[in-house]
Length: 443
Image 1 (cartoon, rainbow, N blue to C red):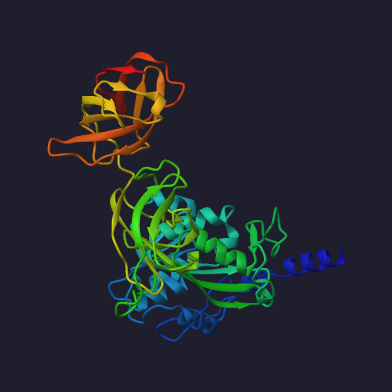
Image 2 (image 1 turned 30 degrees about the vertical axis):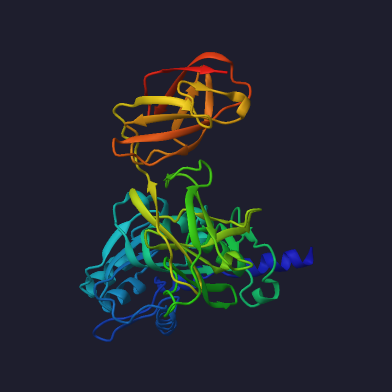
């Protein structure tokens, strides 16, 4: 109990409101004429923080987003280095506007909550600052996913942590996070969570960043660099890349993915390597890297690895490729992201037993398939959105072939053992459009 009370008191003491009230400023500034403005955070500390960020000194041609800009020092500093900057905060601060006027700054200042950012139409940014914000948000993983989706390159996450000095003592522990219902942290009602360093890193990885690197962890503060891309492919040939066999939606076994859902990508591949761990895998979707969640080999020697769909993908066809850390990328597959099914008319051109190839008849005793040939299916049709019925029974679609010269696709659907024998009707549906019914004898 004494330890709990000591922790509570330590959290309460993290209160800088007195310093802020005394100065009226959180950031410190030196104006062009040399006039100093002293805030709760020293100018020297701000300069040191900015210099530690792994980004180029010359930001010309780069777009920078500063979320939780406060008085705006980091926004104006990035602009001074040549960037086109958008600064965001949840309330308008007169101090920001005052400095903006005195610097004749062209920073685009927006008043938005972090959860409003996806719908704000701001576009994408090469670099995002997310400094001192994470512990202020009620839904930290959602916020990081939003931030990841807005970034095309680098995100700097600076956050309160509970164990900045001792985090290395428990790197193998399950990540944990404190929750503050009222004013437990710094006497502030807008402080919600206190992650450990391990939890902060895990949150950033789970949000969809390819690489997450701890820059600093001291006291109650940690700074993390989060990258959307993997490190460059190795020079030279290196080892053989994985032989990618298929890329599918882990839930539907199709090729369609929705960014509004928690979707997982399953990759099947072969490699002569005796073992593969998930940390070796480098999946890339439309240029964005995403870490593996697991990798395992089946009884046939084929490996399967699952990955989260990376945030921030636009709609359309996306290239997917896979490599090892010490190999180059191999074969490319395509997935469809947020693509509607555009179906006008479906036409059946024949149905037969998928094993005996007897026209207009299937044999359930063989435990086989009904095979049909259909035209009119959209390019992004798959096993998850094409439905086959025989009578009142919905069959499991196992295979959809590529279109032949006439645009017809072969569909194989598994025959359930309890399928009623006799005369039945075979129908294909996709995107709310059904084909004509094809007479079929079940024997």
